[in-house]
Amino acid sequence: MTSTSPWRRWLPRLALESIIVVFSILLAQLVNEWRQEHDRAERKDRARRAIRAELLHNQREVRNVHPYHVRVADTLMALANAGAGSVDPGVRPNGWIVPADSLDVDG
Figure 1: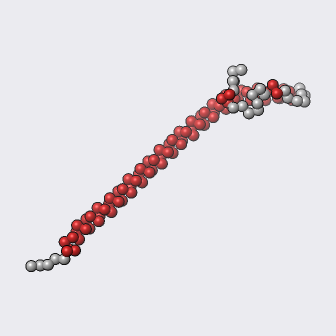
Figure 2: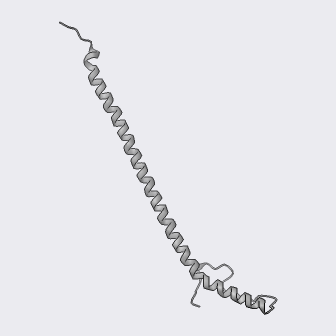
Figure 3: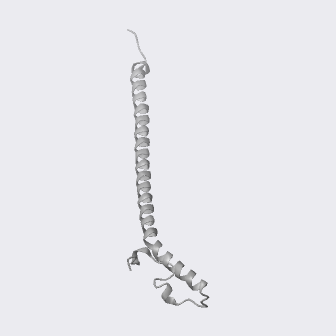
């Protein structure tokens, strides 16, 4: 009768289970990294869309207030050329800096 060490009997199983555990941990890390990269890419995309929307909104707002500022500048130039010493507040009825959403450009 041959006596075999318990280690010899369990060593292949222990090695296989160890490899499976290490592989599972590495796979879990890869999946987690992929998920984090996917989330990061989604956040970048949302940020880009928000920035683009804000830039387009700001561009529209600038276009809306531009005629007002041109009229004020033209009036000031005309007054300066006429030698006016002071500027009537009516020249800039909406102030020097006009919030675009409060401006009536048709008026």
